Each structure stands twice: as structure tokens, then as C-alpha cells.
Picture 1 (spheres, one colour):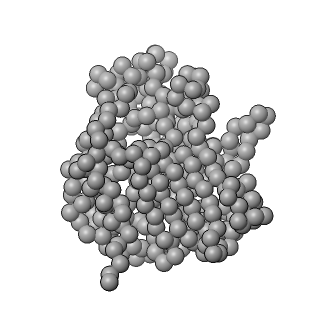
Picture 2 (tube, rainbow, N blue to C red):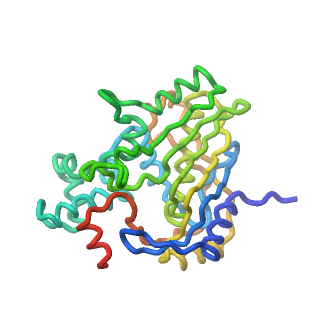
Picture 3 (tube, one colour):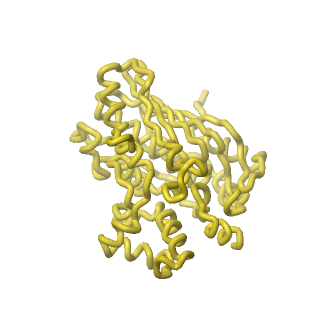
Length: 325
């Protein structure tokens, strides 16, 4: 009996949302989504890598973004300098709030990003995206200190491979939504908010909990990113890669992605590629994008769709402007 291609886990969920998703509306932007609460997919990383094949996933962006997280960065300049623009909207969202109050000159997003790229001082001031994954993974703010969760979790694993507490958390109520002071509130909604490592039979596994997931644009990136993170952790800890398990809270498709989703659902999955991590990488801090080797990736063509900038804290002025669109 032929084993069903593991990519169908993703495609089945995508189809379920298109055909049976429950309609909801974003409170700030009014954008409609069609969603399900609670789902799980899992991929065995022993032989191949779950980089989706029914549409081309932008691998350079996946690797650069994960390095940005893992190195503890929170300024988009590294990404902008490497022509990775998946995070441009959120610092610009913060800049637009200042524009609405007349505190800064009016700039288009393209003009704003060009200044981030060409002016280091400007980038330092306006390119910062506080309380984002890299900061929370490697520099969690605590009383009089910061906590490196990644360093701790790997040290804990080394001391106790059977540990059940190997958790890295990104959900900090101090900076989120109405729990935060307005001037400290994160303008980006933390979506993939917690992951746990576990060793089983000499194989390192990673379980991600994602409280909110954009199935069409975000989830293919998330799958690839956290599967790659599993490989990196396995490499530096001396284990074989195990399973990547992806659990969703609210998983949804945006109303303007239906046509693209149906195009993807008409395609058949191809053989997954393989990914290797250079043997020179002995610690997470040594990891660089150049150390990742992708082989035999032959996907269907990409399918483009528009990103909706929703979630996170919106000022009253920003809410009013978004709802007028």
C-alpha cells in the first residue's frame, strides 16, 4: 500500500477551511476570515523535509527569518539588507501611528524601507520591532536581567535528556493587547507563541503551539521554519532529527485568499526535498544561513497573495483609519 504524502495533512486542512470554515471578522480591520479552532499536523524529519511542494515556498526568506529569530535580533535592518521584506509592515505600522499624530514626516512604505536600508541611525530609531520572537527567545526581559531561553533549554536538555520542561515561550502578557500599557504594547501579534523540545529514542522532536495561523501565507513558512529549527537543535545537541508536531489554536484563511487556495488544492504534491546542516555548526550561536543546504526541491510555481496586517495593538487613530479602508 502506498503511503499517503505527508503534505496532504496541510492540503486537507486548507480544503476544510475553504469549504467549512466558520466566518469571523478582525475587530480592528474588519477583514473576514474562515476558521477552525484546534488542529494538528506532524512530520517525521528522519528522511526528508516538509517544505511544501504544491506551491513554491520562499526558502531564502524562511532561513533568513529563522536566523533573525535565533540570533536574538529585533530590528528589521538585517532582513531589509538581505532583501527579505516579510516584516516591513509592522515597523511601518508603528511609524504610521506617529505620522497620524504629526510627529514624523509622511513617508510611503517604500520610502520608509529605503531609509531603513540606507541610514543606520534611522534604522536604529525606526526599524526596531520590540518584544518580537528573537528578543523573547534570547533576551526575555526580567527584573534587572534578561533570560536566554534557548541557551537554558539546551543546557537543561544536556543535563537531563528525559526532561519534560524544555519550553521556549514568546507570549509575554506585559506587552500584549489590553494587558499592556499603550506605550509598551506590541504592534505585532505573537502568533507562534510556544514550542517544546523532547527527546525520544535518541531523536530530538519539537512541538509548536500556534495560537493564530494564516493557513495560506503564514503556515507554509511556519512549518519550514520550525522543522529547520528542529534540525539545528538536533545537530548542536548530537541527536538525530525526530518529529515536528504543529498544533493550531485558531487556524484560518483570509477571504481574499480563496482563489489562490483553490489553485493550490488542484495540484498534486511532489517528493519532499532534503535539508542538511553544515557539520561546522556546533552551537546555536555559530549558526548562519550559509550553513543550511537544501537539496532536490522541485515544487510547483509560487502563488502570490496579499498579506493582511491585522492583530496586535492598534491605537484609536489607527483603528479608525483601518476601518475606513
